[in-house]
Image 1 (cartoon, rainbow, N blue to C red):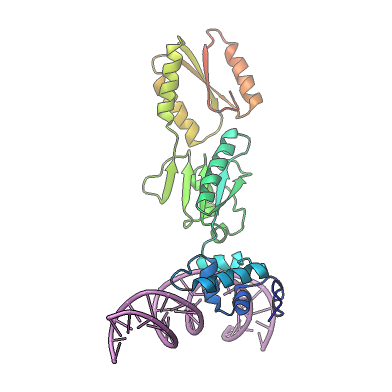
Image 2 (image 1 turned 90 degrees about the vertical axis):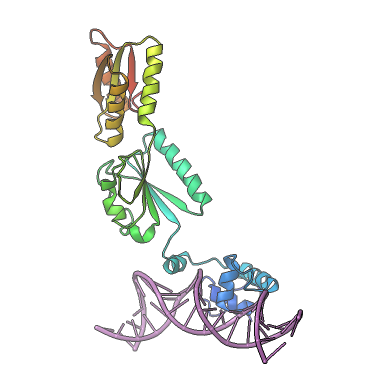
Length: 257
DNA sequence: AGTTACCTCTGGCAGTGGAC
DNA sequence: GTCCACTGCCAGAGGTAACT
């Protein structure tokens, strides 16, 4: 019998549930039930208390690799974003991580070095390391290397794919543009410019279309600019230097604004 | 090339004791 | 003797590395 608090002699490194079982005088299965909180009705209260005490004394921590192996899931999800230069993505991560934690799942952030292009698999075998993938402002096709055709995928701010096994959460782009246009019109603006991000993605294309529709019948000039402060500034200066310059400029992104 | 060990979890089942 | 609730154990699955 090992001294309380010290690992049994045959335990080469960290204690296992088998060590706890041996020290507590119960089966390994009973240890599993107690420590996973599913013991009521199957293990006596006194026994459960003893198992917990022994586990604490030995410093037992479940082996996550073995648990993942047994359960076939890792309680880990990956959030892929095309960049970390925008506060928007920081907000996405914070919110997603909070909700994931509330469901007992960890969230790993992966700013893809390829931007919105096809993302590489950061794990080598993401399908074995993850339970699911979340992606913000990226096309589902760009995530093929990471998720294959098996990992669940939730897309944020991306083209909906009817029929595909993919959930999509989108902003109310058209409604937002309508409200924005109505607000600017109410302020008396009649000449508009759209400082559009020079990025070929569904969200920016959709925003442009929605804005065009909302401002139909007005003077709307669209200028494309790199998604950066310097690029947007240069494009805006050019725009404001033209005759009949716009009185209101709508930007695709906070960075450009 | 085939076998074993690693570690955890869980469905199914056996043993025990109390009530009727 | 039968039924039921409670308690705890057995067996097997899962991927990979080490071993035979």
